[in-house]
Amino acid sequence: MRPGTVALVLAAAAAHALWNIASKYKRGDTFVFVWAYTCASALLWVPIGMVLMAKGQQVLDWRLAVGSAVSAALHIAYSLILQAGYDRAELGVVYPVARGTGPMLTMLFAVVLLGERLTTVALLGALLVIGGILVVAGNPFGGSRRRPVPGILWGAATGATIAAYTLWDSYSVTSWHLAPVSYYAGTLLLQGLILTPIALLRRHRIPGVLRVDAVPILIVAVLSPLAYVLVLTAMLSAPVALIAPLRESSIVIGAFLACWLFREDHLARRIAGGVIVLAGIAAISL
Image (cartoon, rainbow, N blue to C red; front, side):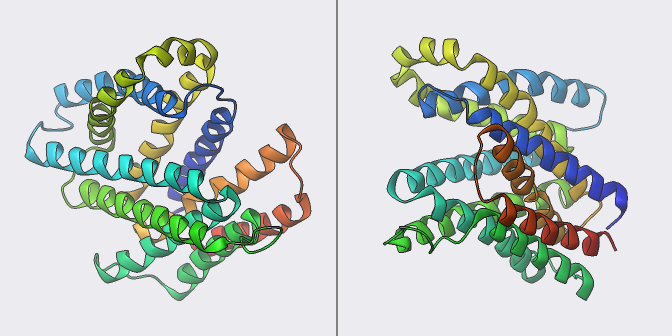
């Protein structure tokens, strides 16, 4: 993978880590929070996508409509399954399993379904990145967790949705040649339209969320789509089988920020995992 592409994905990973840290400061209703930043993202990116279409960089046709609709459905499924997993099992199990199985399944299906071919060094690098992520996230079977199976199942289901939307989005921008910004703007618009009826059922909570979570909403609204647009752009010049694990290096960045901002422990383990991820990134860069 070219160094410029690696830098693009790592920039996306940094933006992803920052918006996840911002979301930890959320204090209001979770669903309304997600709806609010999704709508704010759409308000920001849809005009940009329309400008690009006006300049001829994207045609408003059935490919854009179908691609954005399927992507929106998959992203919403990911959000709902992840939240359901957090409600029914321990976060310390669901999170590492999801972030490990997601890129692993993406790599597998990219090779089997999309016919991508990886060199031995690149494959080793991708596996090192996934292994380092799991080291940073921690052992889901450790500590006081007595029933890890539900968390593993929810985490695996979440990982499957991550693989699904990653593979679909890669197909949309590479095979259907959809412009990343216009494509994801359409995805955000449809996500907002789908979530709005449910949010209106909780409309009595909307003013409170907008008041107490205004800053996190704005940060996530800007950085979340920016991170993913960078990833979609990188998919134009590199195999998604390598992009998927590389973008998950955001977990390492987020883990170190969490140690600094929230005084979370296990710094030594996270450093060790970070070193493994860096080794994997170096191998992919070759």
